[in-house]
Image (tube, rainbow, N blue to C red; front, side, top):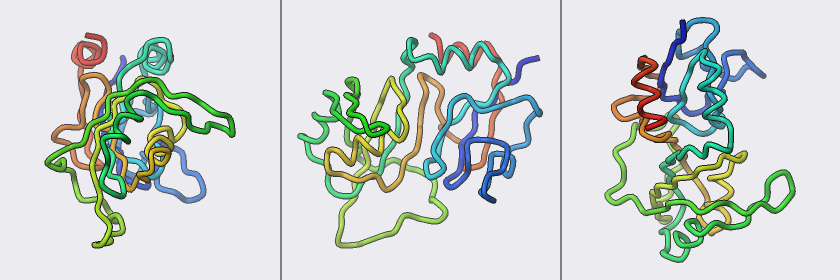
Length: 194
């Protein structure tokens, strides 16, 4: 029987159930059947939406780059984001992946105003009152290692906080870090493959 869960992965938690170097894992926060695993991953220092399942077909469909599922990230960056930076993010830019230049695909990028209502992060980002921050929504159909962070850095706005808010129509709306909700196969597939 396949199981489907949507979770809000907290900050500083590995996207796996087995421990590594004493770091916190999903097992510290979520009690799910043994054969359930995350589809894809979020970096240790990122937070937000992960789908957990034992449905191998879903795993293949979501991770195969051919299918190009849109993922939306809410990114708090250092500085006041400019229209030029947004345009560069939207048009795609060259970043370095494994030491090689990589041209990102076009993306949707916009400034989130007002700032999104997000849970307080623990520990919080370092607050510096003389340096402004901005929140942007960045929607990508590809997922290279640390791509969002590399993209915002490339346009001059380093990422301070990174939350994956959405994959297609599945969101973390209403969830706090460390919370989980179970969905039926029909409901999840309907949101992902509409």
